[in-house]
Length: 274
Image 1: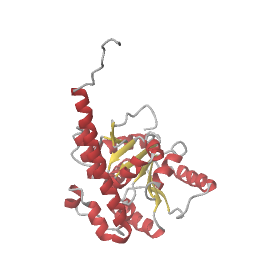
Image 2: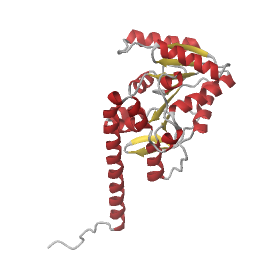
Image 3: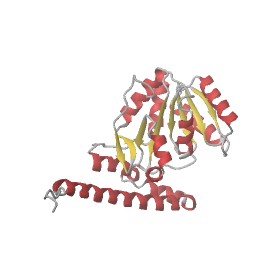
Image 4: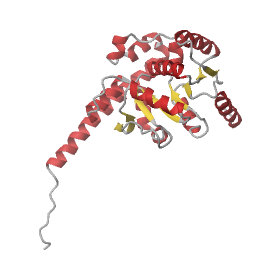
């Protein structure tokens, strides 16, 4: 991560987006190793709605190529890795669950964490819950950034606060792609592993409900979230899910066409000109 000491998981193209073939244990081990040795790092967790947005935006694809790990957060992203690349992944790497596992490991190893995102109320609840689950966890800092673009001076001050806190792990919960842009901008400034965990703050703080395990396993988390917040999320998932299905079908067709071309190579006419 950000150095030569740690090799990162292999990545495969999913609709042009490079996604890591990895699992919970591997990600936790690599983050903890980097944090313990003071190495910076960038991690993202790729759900379907972000995958479809990155697939159509070259700027986001180029940015995410600089990340150390882009884990398959959504089940359909994992399914695509398995179907097209034979990755053999038995589970996704869900950002909220990964955050919980990392907090447990950080509490055990004495590595401080930093929380960046959410409202003041969400952060207060999140701190209380995390310390209830992991009493030995060191929360070096927590801040709710303004809901507007930061000035250059504010960016510099934020980096200073995070570095001065001594945190080895920074959880970013400011929404996609804002959190990915923030992490990438400060990939050389923040001396910690940055993880873009999205709605994990709200879930762990208890202000939003998490989909039941049976829905998560079957890739139906989007449906649960639409039921919870129909006015805000229906359009996002209608567009994202339709786009995902179209991209999946397109990839199947393109692969079959490539296979046919290999089976029936185009013949070149080598007869002499008259």
